[in-house]
Length: 240
Image (cartoon, rainbow, N blue to C red; front, side, top):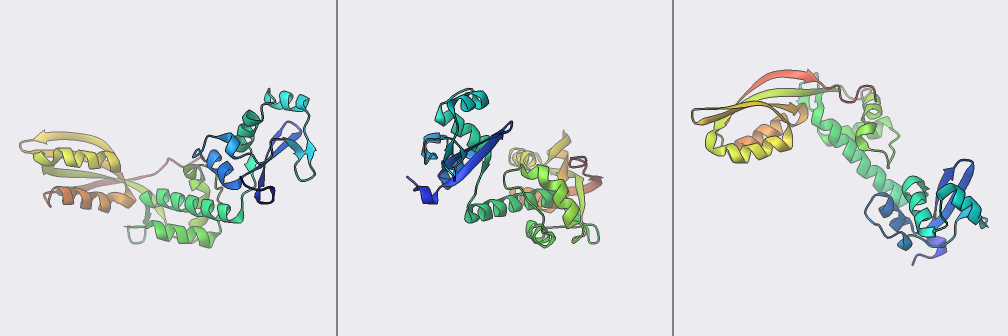
């Protein structure tokens, strides 16, 4: 068990009351991230405090009023999952790095340089996020943070978000393998069988078009004909 000197505080405010508990930093973080379910592993002290550092405990009446129970495990679960955990510096660094990469990947799928009409790779997006010093929330959903990140990095990178519609023609005998790729990359708009060929039209994030076509060409052994149809602006993050 983690000793008290290595424990961190998890806290939550309910109404005007603050509730704090001492927890193992790694186990508590895994619980918050959904990687661990055993709340008892996180608790270092089986007490709930108004002020953990001063050792001021909360009354049972206050616990029942706020949580409807005095069960320490049920209360700890609420505090850890819905409240705030005092992360260690290393935990925060790891979480921020992972979230930054996740956001960069999401943006890179749609992002192109309008000056060259070529994709922005995730590494370039990551670098722009660092240069822009964007404030990333390690616990907030990555996609919900995309609008604020885009606003910041547009001051550094020429960037345009697009999806592209591409028409493809492959020999019919490759249909099974190619259909699995279609499901992983984009949205099938329409398709048809014509003689011994399978024809389809797909909408893809602009940043993955080349990757998609390379993958289809690979599984069809180069038996692919493709034609760009149109570009569409991406509206999905507007207004968030």
